[in-house]
Image (cartoon, rainbow, N blue to C red; front, side, top):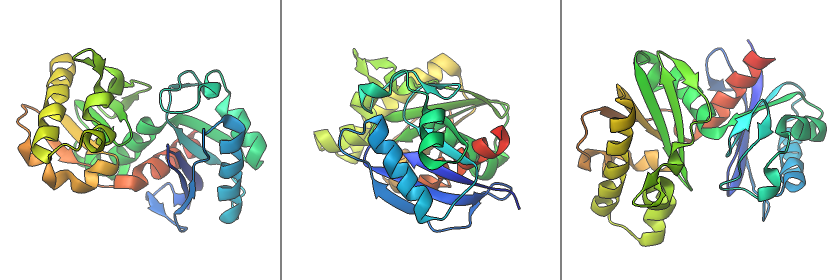
Length: 247
């Protein structure tokens, strides 16, 4: 059995578990700790260390992080503190935990898991786009199973604003949208993605995927669209796979 710890850093919570990366199964409990207020690098690193210690882990760690991550360095900070820009996240978390840590974009992590062990396992051919609907919109794009990293298409402009400002779960809650009205906004965004990439499949992940039956039937697309299977475990599993292979 090959194992690694996967960590998913989110706006409200930092989640982690130990994963059998050959099966995609969690072999520990899933631990969730609150993301510290302002979520500056040192404060987040402390919480990550607390999470690692709580599971008694002493091995390789993969971390999904909500930013463009290039060779372990955060280059953007759309939904986290600006102090992260230019931070070597790999080094920061490795130093904090004493464990070799490998970081990637959080939506890319979720996509890797879904393509390896979820709905994408049987639908890997062609262009597959996974979108995570939550605080923002994360994107992961695969061609014949190969990831194109750091796409960040939640920031595609729709009516002059970032798509995630209009069509994320946070936007739905903020505007108190009915499912019908929310689906209309999501459809507008997905139509734009269709026209740019002509995908073979959309996979909808993130927190909102648990309620997929309330809005997916309201969409009318030329592309097949399905909910993710791994839901809120995808980021943890994908981060662990990434770290296990990187190590």
